[in-house]
Image (cartoon, rainbow, N blue to C red; front, side, top):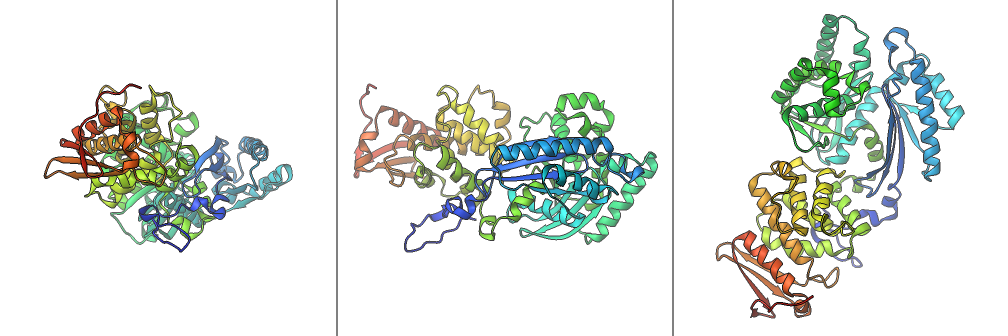
Length: 526
């Protein structure tokens, strides 16, 4: 994913590639405002940050319930119209105050299908000057699938997006959106079918039809997009006692989903709602979404199930990206942006990466990108209080809005950054989370963190190596070969950090300057 092109006037960025956010066109995408007028909620999102992996500068929603009761009346819910219009007035005023350019607003199933949908859009235009674009079901499916691609470039699988009044499916293959279908399986519509028997028959029949339209393929990865799916995933976490309540990239198996759907049906919804922090209006739709998910899993038989917090709004941002930007690794781009914005010596992350890599000669491409991310982030939290810096960096790494990271990889990154600031992690309040990474990965992350901790003592210039590491597991040695210019930097603290790194590797540490062996220095005073 990392470009390695060079020109006569540009240095070779090696595995890092040249960061695209330095380009004016990419920076133009750094703050984009989107309003999503859904059947259940109306939301404003303002994206900010690295263009390829934007942060949520502002994110607010109102559960307006525009689509409630439409099955009976054919009209938007009157109270929902009032609430939605009020929310849009607020969102337009907020965007104007924040200096955001023209907002992009889209409406989905409720406004698309309601007899008074055009009327509502005219009210919004008249009172706010905002034009709402109505998209059809296939376009909704495409944009949701593109939202998934924002976080997982090159993904393959089946995207299942559930809204209030509709459910869409889209194929992903080699990072491209393929076949798309839409249906009326939204919880608001299902709630209007009062007979449980008729409702379940409708769900079964509709999913069977969707299965046929999608080519009757099974065994794919299933990406779940939408608030009802996220609520079910949050309940799955509660049932399992899962220690990291980050929904994006949360993985479930079909068997676990079956257990959780049964758990939801057997427990008091209000009690679950309180324990899981789910809103009343969202929880009211979960019992209907449960039956849809059960049928989708039974029919499509996915190999695994992944929650995506990215959907239609992120897909609209992805729509604006040039191909070159889309193909970039969202994790590395976000970490680059953080380094430029917050590190004391921007650019040193790349130098640090070259410094630590001799310790990871067998690293896979996937592991290398996590090491790159750690090196880029190694100094972005220096403003935190020194006593809590190790906790701040772990919390940030495991909970930050970073795309393209499994939960186990978040924990690897967090442990590495924790050890960048602390020699030990025993007794940490994060210990329950550590277990999401395999023991050998925890050890590898500790080595990375201690190597970064050492390297941070030796910086000279952002693009100048202070020396190099030579590691041999066979001979049981770790050599630090210092450049003469870096030799004065290697004092008592640096020696202690080198010793800690050697101990973590279980080898003997040797320090040399200009080819000469150097023994441990006498104690120094600060």
